[in-house]
Image (cartoon, rainbow, N blue to C red; front, side):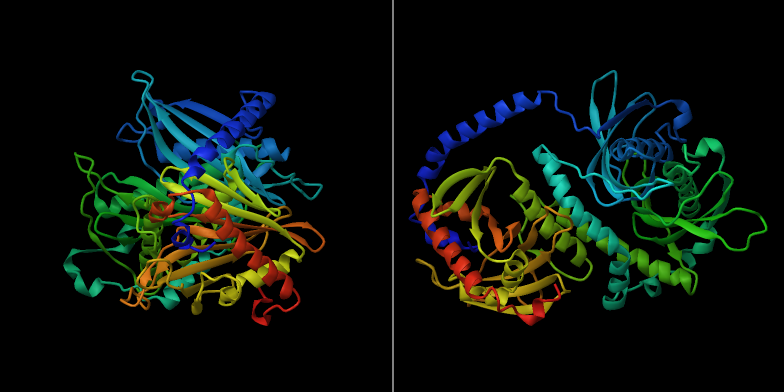
Length: 595
């Protein structure tokens, strides 16, 4: 039930692997028969594929596919997928961060696959996978992944999209995590503001040789485009991909003016479409290098639209930030000149670029960590707060979406499931409780009350209330078995209410590290990779409570006897949890009512 429950199980679970084998065989047989019933060639009904041969007209000066052209193809494929689901015209609302892993050469084939991950009221998230293929050698490379948001649009009626019904484990995972990604998009701008306000982003201009600084004004680019019918869709709105291609063009020119070379685009940080443009509009595209680091530079691009030359008011319709590098003959990044920002807005953009770089590096660290290799506790600070919370919740949702859970035991309608994957053994407990779902969520959200029902929590202290949904706690567990001293944990708890009907309430937990709470000789520091609760409403005053725990590699050392000890340990703790909910269902902590 708790992170170090394995210490209680040294007497508990070797035959679980042998006893589980027969169950797994039966489970696989059921899945195989189900697959046959559904048809072997299952394909997502919203999936759209595009293959394009890279011709000379698609390439840049290096004979590689222009990123602008690739963005047009990506947007077209994603739009077709969105419209296949919506059954009506759709427009691009945003494109999430894109990281380019591989360039595409002339003569190669670009394969783009897009499908709708989840539909909300009138918007939907579309997942895109891009690969390249060499027809002569048959080699293939991953180029990039992207996530786009499209909005369905009807002129005469309000759109209410039908929901996606995921069938495969991958589809269930993407469907579940899409809600958390949507939440992160909505708070993105506030995240940057909070980081700049609460975290010192130091400019190091005073440490640089002024004679070697390139004025940012020298990199400024302004270009105008007239939207013609070939640039627009069947509704007369400008293709999002076309606007993105124009933005990539001016950003490349700005980057070239700093480095005096041909730069390579490595990442794009979220295209956000603030409004539409139509055939006949003039689009003014502006780009400038916001900041230059040792081996990379950030270029900011914005797009404004106006209808007639006499208009003085221009509509801000899009913005994005692009990261460029300059590669040498060995494809290694070259050292770049430093930038000198303009006073005022230039200095603001300079600091914001540093903040975005810090967020990117923190996020890259979290994403790149392999579970079997990484230190489980990721350092927490304001720059990675939003993404670490997102990662916490999405990791639990991914665990929930697994379809190969095996029922190991059932005692008085309390079920224990196990899941073996690589070096991990995960546990899932499930029971029905006669408590309102929201009440159960609020009661178990308060980790300060956890010692009332969980003997593995000796004490809990609130370290930091990050926001209304996230908090960091210091947990101390009692001495167990032959251990010489108790364990302690620093835990980030992230709580989410349902995004839509059918979604569960979620309480996700994972270890983090804080400078204020280092390891001490008095305790043995423990870590949890992924654990937490999900609550489903099964009826009036009836809730399905599920607890999940992805055991860390160290936990497996304790898996040495049989499943009986594990079942008994979980069952006792879970029944105590049920009694706690029943005893306190009308006694909610007022501080949690606003969650």
